[in-house]
Length: 328
Ligand SMILES: NC(=O)c1ccc[n+]([C@@H]2O[C@H](COP(=O)([O-])OP(=O)(O)OC[C@H]3O[C@@H](n4cnc5c(N)ncnc54)[C@H](O)[C@@H]3O)[C@@H](O)[C@H]2O)c1
Image (tube, rainbow, N blue to C red; front, side):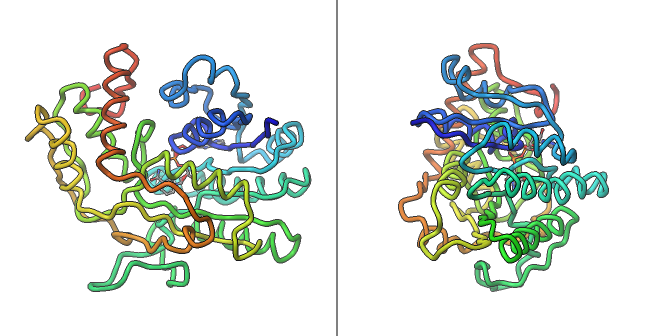
């Protein structure tokens, strides 16, 4: 039997992979996004799979439109990924709040009114501030001191989720990724490592604009975590759960070394120039693995290898979107 999932922001990077995960196992994703261009989904789905995706163009800031679309879809669960990332929230904080905070409230309202069983939404590692020297990776109990508008909005959403559980009994799971990488990651503060892989596929040089250690999460794993949380109550019971995601925490220079090991011709072409990020270098992600055993944990070498290969295929087919490359 095919189940329906309502996925907001599914024309984005993580959303495209959530769509792929659902279609691959025979389910029906209903994509709700303000953008009309499904290029990130097309980059990872063949024509048959693409034909099984349903699309609704709509703005998450329009509560009535979200309600209508969720009611019409009558989904098993809502996966809420629509949002503006750090640089966009910094450039226009009011728009950032409308999309990220109000948009999240609209999703919860719509889920409630349509009797949807669970909502899974993207929070972020940006709810935390920068690490103190020697500080351990934060777990879900660690204090949140966001240093960006974006982080403040994501933290607000976790509070919203808590109140919908407390007042209405609507179960939810918020996931906090740090640096997601893979095909489709072409915007946001931590997209540089993926853009570097794209540059390598085209033979161009590239400079990643941040340095230091960060927690790399392969996008297929990120998507799998969202879908699993949409499907199943956590082992420790329903509620308004929030989980950190942890992948491979390595210096950005190590990603460059991994790319160079996989594609020796790229040696010396990728630079790392820029400040360290004002968020933790890694998260303690053990809780989600305790509550949802068996989640995938793709190694960096495999994730980078798969990403390079797909970018090269798209480039060879004349289909690579190079707008995030500097001289595009
Ligand atoms: N990529 C990461 O490393 C990362 C890390 C932590 C959290 N997150 C969060 O995960 C979610 C998905 O991230 P992503 O990397 O796929 O982002 P993305 O920028 O690739 O995609 C976001 C999608 O949201 C859509 N959107 C924006 N405004 C909208 C609106 N008003 N109405 C409807 N749709 C709208 C965009 O069109 C886009 O398709 C976001 O909420 C992001 O903040 C991402």
